[in-house]
Image (tube, rainbow, N blue to C red):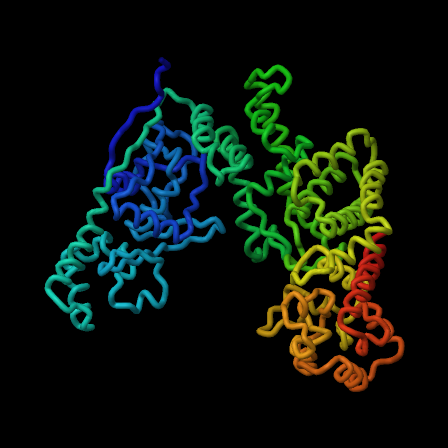
Length: 586
């Protein structure tokens, strides 16, 4: 029998919390210090209160000479003796609640978790405004262990408050409530089984154990495994990914920043781009083995090969996180007519397009202007057709495989244009896209592409002389949106005509962009009433009216057309306008 590399140790919750407070237990860079949603923390306390098992913990007994992340936002006194390998979410949550301190969320903000408890029926809840006003709830169970009040005084004050509010009706009820509070307090003694990995286990083995024990879970992806490996062999690289992600969430003040109006990328998303650029791979499953130094032909591992592969990743990641590269790429989104995250229907498309942009720049030296244009067309095509939905890793690898025989900048541009032209055929514009518009979904690839085309065509909003692109500017944030989607055949009007389901009156072909004030003016009037009145009131020229009809895909005499016939005609006109906008990118 093989010698085990772990020992089993029993700890009380209080013992674990105190060791974390002193810094004897720390969080290694194998995991990120992010906690569960508050509802899951609530459920954890409920399970413990009922005496249910909540799983074992896995620690690593190590000197921890490198960077180690501490749980919570306060400072610790000691260098960690034990590092958490598995169970970080549970311990972070428990520590945060028992100590009443904030923890780091996955959006890189700090938050204090407030769990409420109602002794009458032993009910746990996430505290909200209503619960905090309810005298039957202890609004924040952290107060029970905070030390500001002795628990007996805390209990007495709670009982007194119930008496004052007339909630307590008998001595028996008071005694039962006291017992429930005592049981809550005694969660400090809840037993945990801890498996401690031996000090003889090295960092590589720890990473392998972490991957193996979590491989059956649905919460860990191949990207998580690679980030784990980075924590062991290149912790700085993981910090760089997280720092970039954090900085992308708020505007930089007086300095360059990755912040933008399109995407707030996560570390694993940025990692995908770096891997696509460095290894020309989209499937991450084999990359984990490659980064461990595995020769995919012989199956053997080599530290030298591992170092070479990490150097490849380092060089690629440096280009991915380069702020000039990042913002130069985002200009391609603007060139494609996209204004903000509301027009991005696939973040995967955005990220893989960034990888393509980097490949074109770094490996083929494509001229900046030409690269922006071809990537703008690529983004438009990929988002409209849902190219990177479903088996997106397979599709991206096929797209990168098309570049294997490319030798120069011209070849790169031709390769991408060939895919674009083979995808957006006449049949696509005349048949596929109109069929895509037979939907009541408020957002989707087809309608987002049409909106982008309106921006590219410099179109004005319906019944307005203001450009759609100006009204969709994400930097404007008034209480009322500058532009709204208007039912060309108003909803109330359609209901009166018998089209009374949302799928009928909310067809995307029944919507057009109007200024919010115009939307109010139109109200629920019939099209043949409001349309001539608005045209007369706005005093449009013949040319302006013709352009407006064209941009907004309005069939001649549409206001007098039967609703279903109008939808059919307008879907084809929307596709034609979208095609015209796309052709502006050529």
